[in-house]
Image (cartoon, rainbow, N blue to C red; front, side):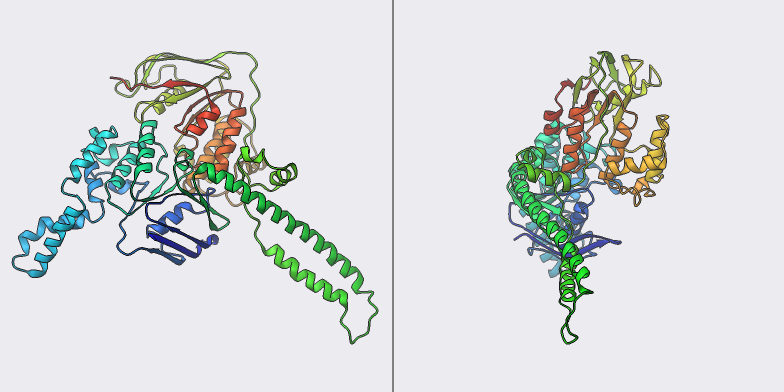
Amino acid sequence: MLLTADITQKTIGNKQLFQDLRFSIEDNEKIAIIGRNGVGKTTLFHMLVGEDTDYSGSVTFRKGIRLVATRQEHHDVNDQIVTDYIVQNLPEYAELKHIIDTYPETMGENIRKITTYSEALERFSQLDYYTVEDRVRRSLDEYQLGHAADRPMSSLSGGQKRFVELVRVEHSNSDLALIDEPTNHMDYVAKAAFLKWFANAKQAVVVITHDRDLLQKVARIIEIKDLTAHNFPGNYDAYLQQNAMRTASDLNEYDTVQRRIVNIKKQIQYARSKKSSWGGTADKKNPFVVMEERLLRELKELEREERPTFWIDQESVSALRPKLEESYQKHKAKTIHISRVSHEERKRDLIKLDDVQAGYTSPLFTPITATIETGERFRIIGRNGAGKTTLIKTIMACLDDPKPATLLHGKVILDTKLRINTYEQEIDDRLLDMGLGRAVERIYDDYELAVNREEIMRVLSSFLFDPYGDYEQPVANLSGGQKARLQLIKLFANKPNLVILDEPTNHLDLPSIEELESALAQYKGSLVYVSHDSYLAEHLGGTDLTITPAA
């Protein structure tokens, strides 16, 4: 057993995250942790790596285990050179290297230091660290990051930093690797390389992810739901089958309990109607009072039980018996609700790209010529840094200026009736210091759309926010999933006839991803999207528009 987690209770403020959450990890296991946004997956990650110790229970590691964990934020290491960052963060490397470099000058005939130095040399050799820098450079080169080996971390994109983390894990000689959302912002080449490494890795690997391509590679899925951990042996397909069966069973049990509650309440009313007219003697207790008290105790016990969370993927729902499907639709977990956009009847060229090249000081990609008509779908494909996001920003900038600074060559021609919106990876800086309700109001104001508090609260509810509790919550304090949903509000606020999505499934949980796919599949406007989620691409389809880096 590499790790055993036994979390009796974990709370943050007044919110309880976990209760009696237990699981273990064996040698060489490949495990994914999933769960709805806000259930505490990232908090659990911090608990497993020892960054959060404020909980009741324990996380126990096997003695001598070598643990490595990826990080998502790199603000405090921005000045470090990429290769130095990787090597210096390998387990034991910095301590051993310090001993090897400094002890010869100070140890003299000190037996203790000589022994420590000898042991450090042996351990350094065991971990194969004498040539690790050369191997790290080769790995970076294999992942097309060789040019960045001697650059500061601050110079890299988000996807490139994730690749640096992968290289660090790959060379860590660890027994257990913990990786939080590894494929977010990865391009298709990086993702393919990661999936290959994941499948062949010799150590145990635990990933927090909702990437279905990655979930298909795991041997076990742990779902955090209803404050505890639920184990599902097998990959994503196996999880969907098991989850459908378990949820159907939970639904039957829940409906049985609800029917019992209704029946008990009727019996209580009957007992209350009869107890005043009982004509018994004083030496005997009123049987209707006894009946009422017994029923009230049972009712209190039944109502104390928390309502379970119900979610079944749409394909499995279609296979449910009619009565069970009706029950599921009544009780299922709430997902985001996106208003449908009316169909544009007449075919028009909404956007024409004529020999377009975009960039800042020089073109990032070779010329692109394409026409996007009403109802058409395009999937933009390209490496990180090839200019996918720059192309999107250039198209959007043309709404205000036909020749924006990033348009270095060619023309972007927009239809006069174009209503375009884009789903971006980053929240508008203007919204960060606002409360959520005010931010939604600002979004509608930017579109010159009238909106009142009641409408804002309805919109918040449709996108899984608490209209009352979250209204004043600062946007800067929202979780990654909450920020993603705010971006979806912005995307559909003015009922666009063309939407552009840049990695829309990042940070969304599985039910919300499926809801987004369902909405976009029924969306009749034009769609341009950047995504390396093969499931999303299969659902949305469209023509591939490949971005080729400029020479």
